Length: 281
Ligand code: A2P
Image 1 (cartoon, rainbow, N blue to C red):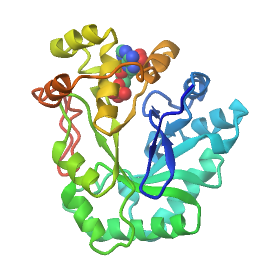
Image 2 (tube, rainbow, N blue to C red; image 1 turned 90 degrees about the vertical axis):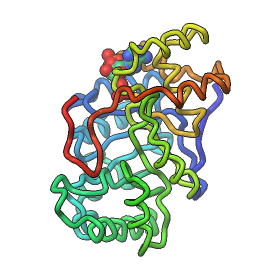
Image 3 (tube, rainbow, N blue to C red; image 1 turned 30 degrees about the vertical axis):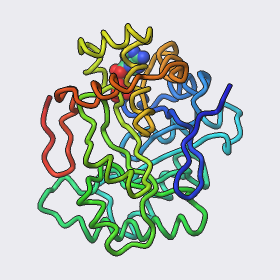
Image 4 (tube, rainbow, N blue to C red; image 1 turned 90 degrees about the horizontal axis):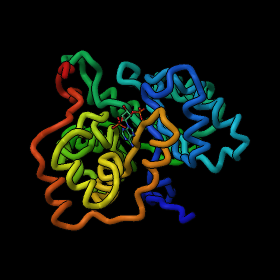
């Protein structure tokens, strides 16, 4: 099987489709074990998901060399700061049962309290992450849910440009300004909820297009991300759908269909945005 990868600006290779573990995995490692059995080697977790122990257990129990995996975790938005970042990183490694991470991200640019200062805490967190990166404990460092103004504030006083920015991205919510800005800086964009947590799967335009390519709407969404240069992180609890979500390299979406997908009216937004309170959808 061909290995499909993206290469980060520092040369680190990253499997082109990752497995999102939010909500799919609570305390139980069975879902991750199944994803590994289906061929996923890129696993995306976070301190906030409360499943790092389960992910670590599944990796160990697979009997597959740790180096074969690409493991991402994230520092939570209420834990920003230099000392806190060092501590949180240590905790994530301990729970995952690993002595290094492939990728470590700042989960959200600011705490829930929208009045709280975030610029300095972000930079302090990043300073800790740069140190961990330079000492070899993290292979790549990045951010998540950072819009251009958050990135600019972070980069004002830091030496390493983030290697990754993980954003909500799917047909109907492609965050073009943030994606273009990141890509121009050489930042690899990753897509969380590449099918809008299944909210976009019933969209008629998508259904019709999926039929044309003889794929599922989920596969169409995942392929769409890849053709935008964006690394998708689909979640699923079913072995069949896990497999299907990786089987996206046998077709190509034509240019006009890409335009059509890029210009859909807004659909499937999660209700989450870094600069405002959560909207219940
Ligand atoms: P399930 O766990 O039953 O497969 P996202 O990754 O965009 O957040 O979406 C995850 C949701 O999409 C889950 O509810 C998941 O349900 C569903 N899903 C994942 N893969 C597929 C697929 N290939 N076809 C249909 N639904 C899918």
